[in-house]
Length: 113
Image (cartoon, rainbow, N blue to C red):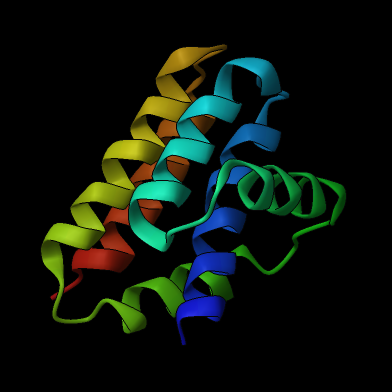
């Protein structure tokens, strides 16, 4: 489950980066730091994961959001940590209304009653 969860979180972050062509140089440190702190990925592994996912087309982001939400079902602090990092990615460059629509979609999925 950890590998699937890690890839889904990475896909979520990459989707936000790709949403409006955010500056990957600015976003990379946030991505790599989160992966190190939460999934014990060293810098090289984080960079490789980022590159792999950025190259993929992700038209099933809802599946990845669901994997994260279900995988962290009883871990609200972990979900909040992901939302915090997602917010950092959105905020750092080229903020648009579509970014926060995406953020709200993820937040609702994580904490739907």
